Length: 504
Image (cartoon, rainbow, N blue to C red; front, side, top):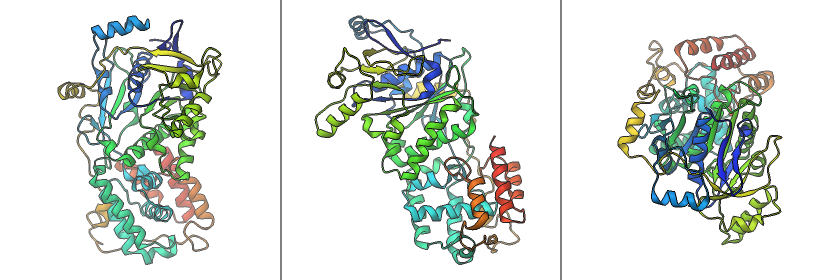
């Protein structure tokens, strides 16, 4: 396995990422058509060669070529000679394809409970009041042992809470019928865009992303996102959910010799566009803390101004492709990008950014002491895999040979909130409302000691996920038993602790 991640080369030296500093994160920026996709491909190949698994979203379909060996052409030979670049080793990378819709890759699913109210509110474009009602719905489901696994579970729960709002008012606070309606309409909109494929089981096992091939190279996990990009909020929420899953799943390991996993978030501006302040703070927190899990995160976008300063300041490794300074905002972006690099006395960084050709970039990586190197103008290396998309036949062949072939293809629909509320499980009491828990001290939802400890111990993760994760029937029984504890405080404590242990 290689002990460096070569990315680019100038006339005098090879510019490489240091594996032990990749978890300090990075960004790849530049205008459309300047070579960002090839840079992604080169990085993925080099990381895989180091034995590091990779995840990347393929928004245009071009990255699927990683699964097929490239070949020398007259044009490639000429370009290598002109730029003084070495000929790559022509070979395919070990690739696993994923797709929320299950068409161009293995299906990727998450349960409603695992997604949690904060990310779901982002997906549904809810305001603060509507988000608060959604959190109450999750809380009521948790308190009554009702698993929210798929879309019909949440719709059934929303209908039940709306129909019985008066009975829940004392224990949880006022529940607006208008907010319930807004959430229901949002769910219908998401499902109309294909979001119903994402909700359900079997849920993605993060360990399946952390695989290496028979030759020791890391698996490159490619998410087919061309169709998903038609629903930008679904795309952004999906990526944030994946990052939070990795954060919660992996143990603390400090600074490893090489990263456990590297994420590439293409079209990264969608993660931050119109995101509420609370969500931005969570994203910043995840990016800051996931480093200790050995995870590197690279944001890929056209303009460095697309990334909030609080996040941009944490990105130590930079590859800057050309920017066009046609408008005042473009000129501001050029100056901002130039200002983030450690100056090179030999370069006018701001001027060079506008002059870079296709496949050329300004590069600054962290050195062995963790300090940014001076910015260098260089050519991105040529990938050893095919530049461009696979055809459908080739893609299907890769999927059939995958180590997860057949694992996620068949959806599972077990008993959950929908079945219980419709009387399929509790047939003896089909019309009985779900029992409302005792009101906490003070009468208001979330008030008193129970509300405080509930917020601390049952937060369910960094994005406030529900504790009712649909992992197995045994886990569901344990969590349901925990909720039968007499006092509200006891229920919250045991539910939170058991939820954390079971997730491990």
